[in-house]
Length: 106
Image (tube, rainbow, N blue to C red; front, top):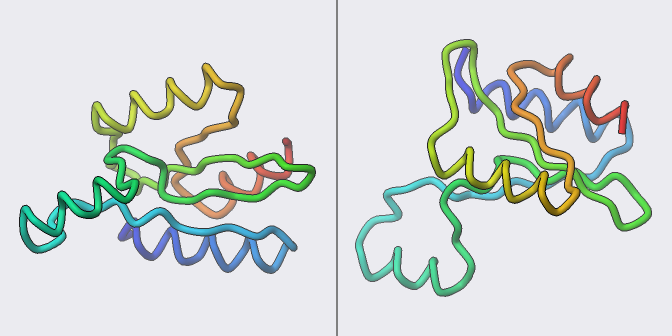
């Protein structure tokens, strides 16, 4: 299954369960070097997780969406390490069930 489809399904399930979340569009290939430079200066950070889930009480969790064969890039691994070292929950998920189990357990 495409990661975009998995992510879309996760977003729908999160909203249905009462969570607010938003995506972080950090894909590469924004057209040209000038535009990419502008985006970086505005906060674009390669490796940032796909979804930020609001947990309430000022807490958030990060979800990296992968399909059954997907694996994290070095930048994604570095972002995971940064999240965990600062106390932010982070999880690679491959399905709606994995995402909901993780978020509901926080």
